[in-house]
Image (cartoon, rainbow, N blue to C red; front, side, top):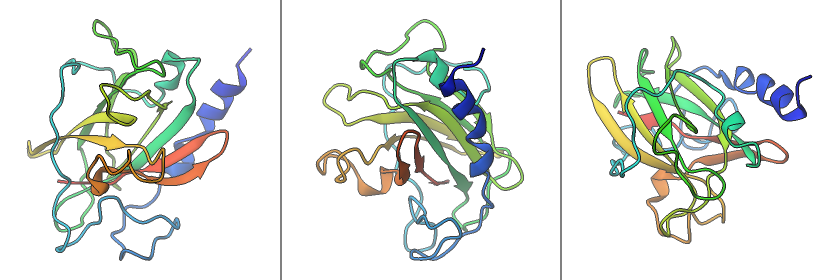
Length: 192
C-alpha cells in the first residue's frame, strides 16, 4: 500500500511542467517571478563553490524525498535559460543536499539526483527541506551543465525566514515560494 506521502509526491512535478517563457519582473503565467531574473539587466546566476560533498554519477530521478522519510517534503522546480532568456534544452541539473538533520550521505546517492531539461527547459525535484549546515541557511547544492558544456555550480536557498537566511546569502540565489502548506513548492530559474 502506498503512503500518503508517496501518493502526494507522485502528483507533483507533473503539475509544475510550466512553459519556459521569459516574462517581465512583475508578470508570470503562474504568478511567480523568475529567480534570478532573466534579461540584460540581471546577468547570469551567481556561482558558488560545490563544497566537499559532491559525488559524480548521481542517478536520474525526480523523487529524492523517499530517501529521508522524516523530512518535510518540498518541490523544487523551474527552468534553465541562456543569457538571452531562451530555454536551454538538454541541460543536466545535478542536486545534492543534507537530510533534515544536516547530515550528508558521503558514500551513496541518498538525497542526490540529476535530470536533463526537455523542450521547455524545465526541471523538477521532489525532495525534503534540508537542515541548516555549517551555519548556512537551508539550501540545495546544484550543478548545471548546458549542452555546449557551459557549467554553473551554485546553491539554491530556501526562503525559510523570509530574509534568505537573515541576509547572509545573495538574494538572487533564494528560491521563490509558491506554496507553503503540507507540500511546499519553490521555484528557481537558472540563467547560464
